[in-house]
Length: 264
Length: 296
Image 1 (cartoon, rainbow over the protein chains, first blue to last red):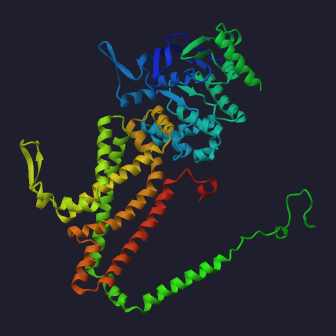
Image 2 (image 1 turned 45 degrees about the vertical axis):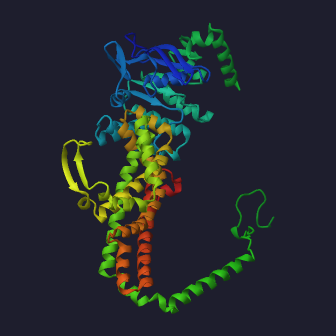
Image 3 (image 1 turned 30 degrees about the vertical axis):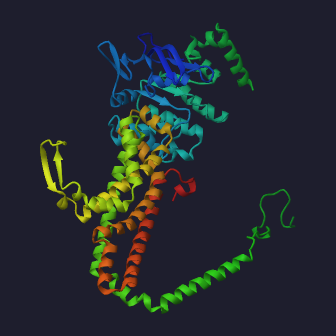
């Protein structure tokens, strides 16, 4: 497993609160990821895992609390004593440094696989087309889909689409990758091909925060496992401690149920 | 089971499989007879009824005044559609914004321009001078004026037609574009934002091209409709196709053949537009075709 650096955290979320309507979905969540660290976010649906992840790149704005990547506040700036939301243009520049992979892939259906990958490096980063195409072919080889550059997303299986989505996010050379249930929309036999790609990525030292229901995958790949419930992190620590000997009774119940489903 | 088909094997001689055919309805023959009789009567009338005056139709089909009318009809249709599309995009984006002022303005615009007859709007613009004798640019409520022009000069037949049809078309296009934009999955916007696209890039590169698939067919309908709606501009004496033939038959009293000239021209233009629409629709359905078609 990749050795995690010991310096200052690369990603730091502090005291995140979030309301949706009359529901409080996040109740003061704090979490840190160091460079090269893989964090798995587990927990029952409705625990706030995805919402937390979406606050990290300001796709959704938290009501309270700060997100920092390499010390830079994401989505807002300090003006005097107050924090004020940044204009979308500047948040876009920050998001370019944070890769995200979605449950439903969200590839652009009107663009070919190659165009899906090269668009953002060219348009956002100003990369030359020849360089972007070369980068795209390298990434396609990495996700083992070299022959699909000219295909359209609709003609690919779910597992292939998700691997392309990972390649698309990697093309921006992000500082951290966020995965929002990357295998939840996939058949079991397609899940493995996606998990293998994520596992290889972890070995290269990519910092990753992964919302997942795959407990076994979390145990194998993550340095840190956090179990969320009711808008809080109920338990966090190395997988051996959290998954084998959880202290919180709610975590015990959740894990018992998750393991039973895995055995089925 | 036929002797030639080995049991439990997939392959067999194709000819030995039973052939399926459509069930034939006895009503089919009655329908064919009715259509044939109808067509024969129409053909008989067209060929023998002297009221059609086909020689007059032939003489005026390529008459310079008619051709000028065709040109004006095409030009007006083009400008109205450009104006309508630009207004439509702006109003649709305003309508989808969270800002209550932008949203409310867009709703009011569509309500007014879709809610009043386009013929009334046309004549209204043409007679603008009756309520605003001068058109000027400056500070309202009696402030200094930067620029001033008499409304009778500013509003010609052409500007009245363009404004009347253009604002009306803008209201309809706004609704079509709004429906197209909302048909694009929200995940597309999220993925685009997550990659670092600015809002304008997300709109132009990701959302709008996908919305086009839903926007193009009704817009084609609008273009074809507008081509014919421009005939309304004849009431403000604009020299488009309808006004050209009206001018001719008011002089020669050959009303029916001149109306046929106009109808034939509209049919020809609409047919060409339909072909263009087919190719544009095909272009914007890239990525949605099946694998077999995509190879073509």
